[in-house]
Image (tube, rainbow, N blue to C red; front, side, top):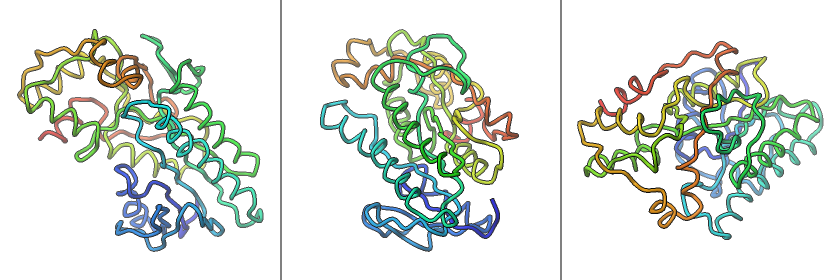
Length: 298
């Protein structure tokens, strides 16, 4: 993708998106931030829009990271929010692309997704070519990706980024985990044998930028580190890094009682690997959990 260029980011005020504009601006890109309020103070954004008044003409790429947080009870009301903020919003973005004159259309759409696409697959190794799984989250991700891939009909290169657990200071996952361990309440979830595909937030942002400049990366991309961990091993290594015990175990029935259907996302696992990223020449700064924890805890 040539520079200078203009890139629109949906979800630009979120944990992953808020650092992207400055990184892209450093490489010569100009960034349009899309937020509900149509304004913000994100470093690197020089133009703001609202989802209701999108104008993507003249943009080279779109990075769509919008989506209601999934780490809450999956009530009917929340399921509707999950669907609207992912599937329906992505359809709106693609509809806007379709309605633009061909010469004004973006050439790239990087769209969010999640490793939940694969469902609960036990010890099966999961490259991007793996079939979709079953269950609520798998179906949601499949529809989300299908909505994004409609843009391919209009000459757009589409990347669907299947993220795992994103570890970063200030991020919801690491914040909750570290808080529990600081109180001495950390421990494995269920039997602890489920795989946890994770990624350091710096690597995820770098992967998004890599996808933006790559001329070859397309289709599903596992946004995970090359070394997934079983929950019990993840717990042990985090406890060691924080110099805290990991003596507690949270039974599956207790998680389901407290979290409802969302507990399934914590008790089921995906042994996903970043085959597409590594094949495209991407290099991880934090390829092992130990290196990631050394950065985050140290």
